[in-house]
Image (cartoon, rainbow, N blue to C red):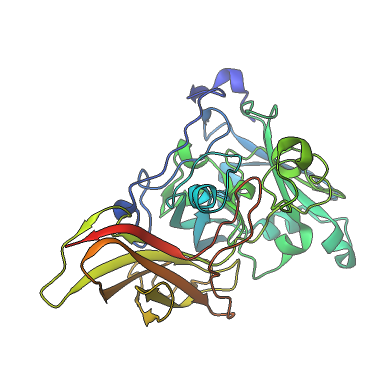
Amino acid sequence: MARADTIKLEYSVEEPLNREPEMHELVSSFLTEDGKGYDRNHGPIPHIDKEEHRVGVDGLVKKELSLSIEELEKFPQKSIICALQCAGNRRHTMRTKLKEVSGIDWFDGAVMNCSWTGPLLRDVLTSASLKVPESSYATTHVAFACFQTPTQEDEWYGASLPLSRVMDPESGIILALQMNGKPLSPNHGAPVRVITPGIAGARSVKWLDRVTVQTCESDNFYQRHDYKILPPEATCKEEAEKWWDRVSALQDMPINSVIAIPASSSAIHLSPDGTTEVKGYALPSGSDGPITKVEISTDEGATWQLAELLEGRETDGAELKWAWSLWRARVKLERGQGRRVLSRATDTSGNMQMKCPEWNLRGVAYNGYGEASELNVV
C-alpha cells in the first residue's frame, strides 16, 4: 500500500475537485467517456503506482490476503454496465423547490454511465475463506477503506455494505480495474476501486486499500454521519445528531429521470409543426432496472406521452438492469414565456418516479419529476 507522503497528489482537503458536466455533453453518449463525467471528492486525488499498490483483505476470513493489481487481474474478470451516481445528485432542485439543505449544490449532472471491469468481490472474499456462516451474512458487513489521503471530515475515507449484498451472485459488486475498457484514471480511483451497482456512489470507494469483513458497519464519518435520508424533523445540524445512529445508511438510489435538453430558462424555437425535441436520462431504482418507459408532460402532469428509449449500441447484449436509459421525445408546446416540461420514469419492477419526495437535511436521493422550466417558447 503506497503511503500518502510518497505519492503525487492533486487538489487538497480544503479544495477537493467537485464538478459536473454540461447536460448536453452528459447525454451525448450511452457510455460516459473519461473526462465527461462528474467528479466527487472529499480530499486530494492521489496518483498511485500500480506496480506497488496492494489491497488487503482481512477480518472474519481464514486467510488474510494482500493482493497486487496483477493478482487481482488473475481472478475471472466481470464487466458491469452501471450508472454511478452521487447521492446528492439533483440537490439543487430539493434546495430551491422545497427548502434549504446542507451540501454541495449539485444540479442534474452528478451521474455517469460506464462499463466497469474487474473481479467480483464475492470471488475475492471466497478466496480468503469466510469465517461467517451464511445464516449470518445479513448481519455482517464488508467495509472498504482508502487511507491514501485525509478527507474533509475524517483521516481516511470508508464505507460498508451488508455481506449478504456482496455475496449475492446477482449483485454485480466488483473491484474495478478498468472503465470503458481502459485502466482507471486517477480521478476515478486508479488503480482499483469498488463499484456497487445501483447503490449510492459514496459506497464505491476509490483508491481502495483494504477490504474488511466485520460484525459492524464501517465507523468512517461518511458511513455513520453522512449520506443518510434523515427524517424531516432533523432540520439542522444539532437536530441531526439525534438521528445519525438511528437511521440506516443510504444504499439503493431511487428511480429518477432528468430533462437535459432543453435547459431551464432557455429559448426554444419551435419547428413548423409546433414541436421541439426533448432529451434526457432515466435511472432505475437500485437493481430494479432496466427502465421500461419514460413519459413527458407539457400540461403540468394532466396528460403524458411516451418518450423513445435509446438503447446504447455499445452494450453488446450486456445486462442493463443498473444502467441508465437515454431517451428523447418530440412534444408540442404553446408559444409564450414560463413554459414547463416534465418527465417521469418507470422501471422493470414497476417503480415509478414521484412528483416530489420528502425533504431531508442532506438533500440526498432527490427524485421528483424531471423538469425544464421557465422556457421561452417562440
